[in-house]
Length: 189
Image 1 (cartoon, rainbow, N blue to C red):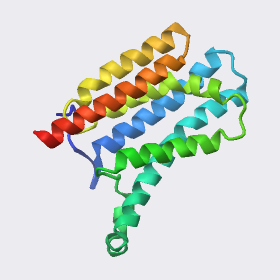
Image 2: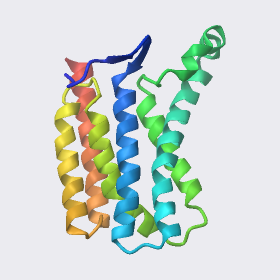
Image 3: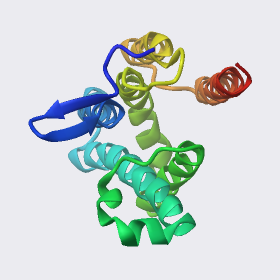
Image 4: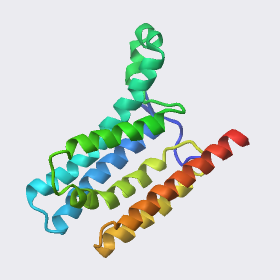
């Protein structure tokens, strides 16, 4: 169940709702990351470096997810190049996209000694962006998970404390457990 239809028509062009909500979530996370960094007193270059985490994660994730499917079936993409601009779907899109996004973020932060602080500025806004992105997912319960992610992110940002190591670990474990439960529900039912 989703609040949005699977496809939203923009004139004659069909756009996947999940791609649109993902883009909206990315833009929201980008804006909130800059705001959080500035509120914390970050220098302009530090705020910019924190904001760069968001597009690195987004672009690295989408490109790596698309690349794995191109490598798995290059003939389909040679026969129909239009598939290159279609948002990547399938069982490998999420894990490969996450790995590619994390790799792109790590590459972007490789020379920054203040990378833990930059990640701290981006943690809450990224969770908020994820909450917006989840609204377009078709998987059962994804839209219901969105308010929980948003509430946790808002609490972290409103307290001004940022994300602690324990909060980040809890978010990773909680998200992994949720993804596992989704997979069990969708494959076992």
